[in-house]
Length: 385
Image 1 (tube, rainbow, N blue to C red):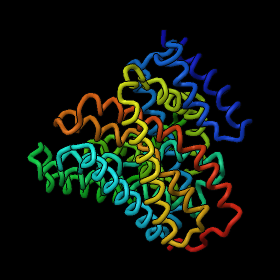
Image 2: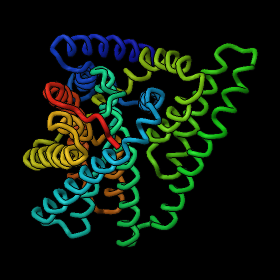
Image 3: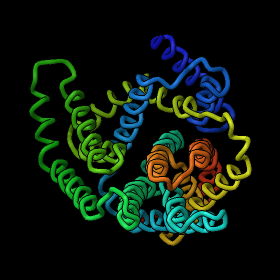
């Protein structure tokens, strides 16, 4: 029964989050782990139903929308250099690492390059929560991470389109590039002219919570159109938040959206990440899982950290930024499904990759906590331009 599942998820996630904080870790780590305990892999009291999937998707969209609302647009634009270096470094090192691992395992050249592309993906939805808890979301490091996440999503999906067109896949590179370009052009224009107008007009309606409803409409439309154009829905939601962040309604929308999100949808999202984990039969591919997990964590950590260091951050902050980029999340799962459909990934490897994505997600919050604690003792970047 859905209402019972929701009661269990909310109770367990809040208790686990509290325990995690008391142990000196971000609460999101406890919420991720309790999902595994409640899910089919351990207790089996919560199952990955379609309704929970939809609620989880709303949760991650709202989480990134809130991150956008908290973004300082001027600081975000000034962080272009650091974001670019972090994104490029965080793509190149995993790309090459995945390719050479594929070659060592006897994969074809196409399969090896696809493995590299998959490991290049990043999803910072988990990192956003860890940054919020450490009060670093608005810091130069947090801004660089968010900017790098947007660039990473764009570059990896463009690279995927180019790769699929080269091997005769269904994706047409030129069409995808045009579609993405149109989305970003339209999203920026709407943020400039349409979003403020919509909020001002709907604020005049004589109904309850008209401003909040208008903001959620904008958020969901941005997310939908981003997904439709091949850009991650969470990037669209983040852009919607940034668009609203420069309006007079920012604080009202932020407070009310945060209340809705963290009371229901966001806990469901964090817990569901663990619920969807399935470890049955993974023992047969144990060493492949270990090797891929180590490669996934360290290539992204090293690549993004080098980029951050080149941009002028201290080593502690650079490693914290690199750690924030480690989680592959839903972006890598999308790529893994594409690989399975085109026989670039075997069923056995697909199962391993799903667990690797989970491991990178669970590893991200404590790594961020550790490196940013170390980084706070050193000198952080003051000018990210």
